[in-house]
Amino acid sequence: MSPASTTSSSTSTTTTAEAVSVVEVVQRDDQMQLEMMADEEQLQEEQDAAQDAAPNGNAF
Image 1 (cartoon, rainbow, N blue to C red):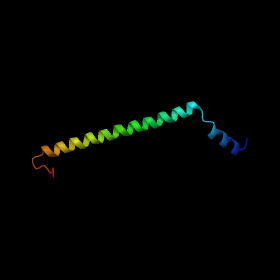
Image 2: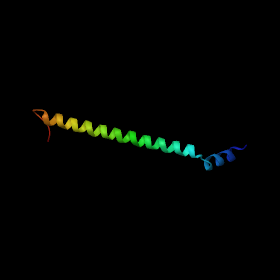
Image 3: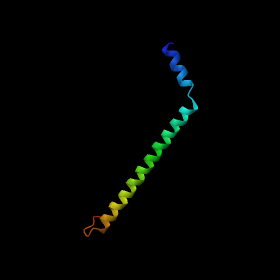
Image 4: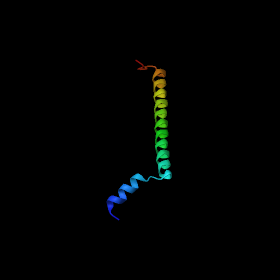
C-alpha cells in the first residue's frame, strides 16, 4: 500500500458514522459557545445592576 493511495481513499470514503460524529461535535461546540455568551451577558447585567445600586455609582 502506497501512502498516496491510502490518503486519497480515506478522504473520499468518509463513513456516515464519521460524518455524524463530526456534526455532533460542531453542534456541541456551538451550544457551549452560546451558553458561554449567555453567561457573559448575565454577568454584565449583574455588574451593571451593582453599579446602578452603588451610592457613588459610576453609571455614566
